[in-house]
Length: 176
Length: 238
Image (cartoon, rainbow over all chains, first blue to last red; front, side):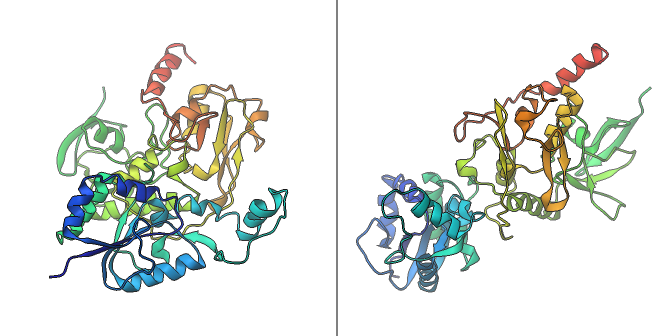
């Protein structure tokens, strides 16, 4: 049997969940004795590959690019984990939802600048009307709340998934 | 003489005095029924609906905090079905306003957050309403962030029943319901508020907080000070 293929993606989040993932420390060696990390912000692969077994998704879906990526991730992954509060509830990125995009961009790019005030339209992806959790757009197999989820919980989750068990997420909670 | 009733909760034989609620008898017997509006020392109100239990022979659920015990009563406080209901109630509390645990003053000191964890709630299926909700920071010492209010009305009851000020009350209906100070004026302009801070101490979430506290810095007292204050009140004939 081929080695399980793990990926991680970073949508609208602060990368804190990935920092917590790195806090697995030497346990990362144990995990990647048994599996390959085929795509992640911390490895130098540009394209999200086919046939991913487990993908940890950090961050809410906030822009057209996030939406495009999460749909591709869903197509190419067997198991998707909503990884951390932003992916699970939209958390801090979702705090803009009651405000609306135009007032938000005006505040950030026009009202609060003194030099050349303008809303960027090139290169950066367009924001969606609201920031939403991952499961609003694609099916999610496992939810791991936490801001960020503790490294021990991430280790238990990956260990369970690699052993073919239903992952035990007890002990997880919203916030920290 | 007080009449003693015997009843069962989750199949366990328990006893209590006439006039006691199912919630009180359960607590005395170490049976934990979740609740966010119940608070020892003030009258119960049945606002949060988390303590709903099944009573044999009754076709509907009953709030344990509002139901007085009776002889031979058979109460089911924990079942798969009740767990589902309690998760649904908790989820609706989260979705009705804008709760962001990560940046909340009550992070790690929050009864709503604890309840979600205890019920094993890992995500929300209901869509967010994301209402535009006000913050009133006009008071010198305290502030209220309505984004985090679950309308348990502990503040209203403690202000009325213990402090005797009745600064807090409720206004509007349905999704527009808000706790208010005096007749809906800013808290800082209230002429009845004594700035005692009891409302802040009993708030189960980060809705009421002391100004100047950082994220996760809103630790509240764990001591049950209200029953003690009640005794003092009664002894002084207040």
